Length: 194
Figure 1: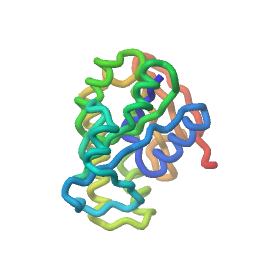
Figure 2: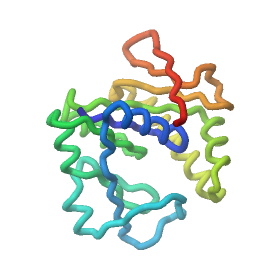
Figure 3: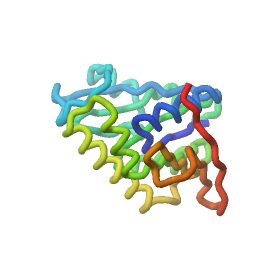
């Protein structure tokens, strides 16, 4: 099974990945290729870059996108193992190109479950401001967060589940809620920091 965690970022992204890895999912390796040797806005965090040849030979075309001038792709062998039900893998994706999700679902069907992770705007901003980030990066990431929510709103039928995250400054009264779009109820779970 392949789980795609769409829209997770910052604290929520880390906690969601940790939770799913502890539940038995392997994190699919991300490959980065920089065709111009510079990023539009320098991003914090370490990135390991590969050559153009390594990037294109090691990634599947369905699982590539561009973010901030960087080409990002995912390990093709791990994806094939997951969609053929030989492994349980997790892929995290934060692109506003929603077409990638519809293609993944079209090609791989029920072997892929897509989870949208929602953080309200005020919580997202307070999370980014708590990190040592440039003002340009904070604004860019908040803008991307809003665009991801808009992508979800326009394409809600692509998603199997929604996780709503409520941090300290959130408008939500629960720490984390798992919602199935076809149901009227939701499950509340606290994803504790370990």
